[in-house]
Length: 225
Image 1 (cartoon, one colour):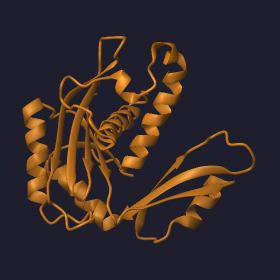
Image 2 (cartoon, one colour; image 1 turned 90 degrees about the horizontal axis):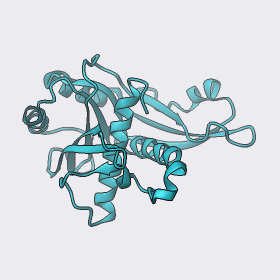
Image 3 (cartoon, helix red, strand yellow; image 1 turned 135 degrees about the vertical axis):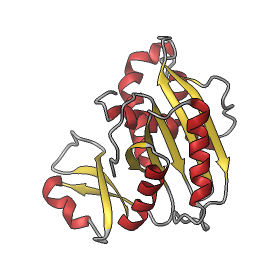
Image 4 (cartoon, helix red, strand yellow; image 1 turned 30 degrees about the vertical axis):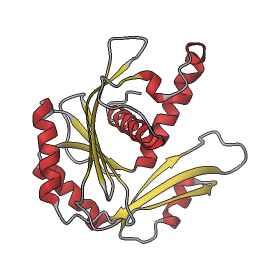
């Protein structure tokens, strides 16, 4: 949705914000070819910084403190950051379009929202292709921009967990065909968790996949992955 401040480092930090949780993750490429990525730092917190199911912050000071502590603890001052937002103020939909450049403007309702689009199948059969669309009120988006400015973050993108999952799926689809013989059929197969989290549920697995997707979105800022 948004790029804010130019960045001077290739380290990527994902910050996943939901109405009841804050997840921060730092993932980097690894020197090990068998497991090519490493989860260097991870923090998943249950916290009330929002009204129920809302993205409207009522405790921004607490959120800033959590992010700044993570940055200071791991010396990530020059990292680039990707925020993912989920809550009732966010609009998400999938549409079929035959001429995206001409037709996307017709679905930008309400007009005071900032919109982002992603083609789900670039070579779709037939005349139409599926597109994922997400939007958020510009005034609410500005709250998160201000959080980034106040924390002095190199924020390169604000997106959604859905976009992170799409990015992770695209990576897995591209890499998986080459690694089926090595039983690499899951994002976790490519990621050294370094003891940061034990995956005991589908929810915990989804958190890791979303974090990896945010890492990929951050690296794509440089044209990588």
